[in-house]
Image (cartoon, one colour):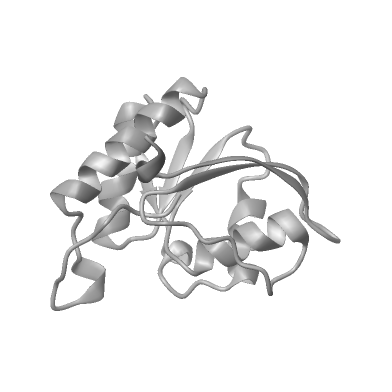
Length: 151
């Protein structure tokens, strides 16, 4: 999931969700819960806007604690994000909250096996993949994408 719409701050890491951003994330999180995304581990970038997004998702989906992971910070490479996925391979359901273009590149790699095709994820968007394997190539199916604008 990409973090919700954020405002400005002197330091990028400190940008907080706007009221519209919170509302959009709540809508998406409630839809996630209706689709069965509940009880998941919620990992996020340590940036304020992602921890706020993750907290809303965790609350609305009756999930566990929010777990900030510096590997999900803005600028993460697809190789690093693949390692994040690998570290949760035994979990049946994991929610990652991060940034664009990082998540879009990862989603493109999962969907098409290439780093050159990016799935554009608007702020507050969530996408679900069913992942069969990550190596030697990605074998995954994109199940759905939800954006606040769709709800």
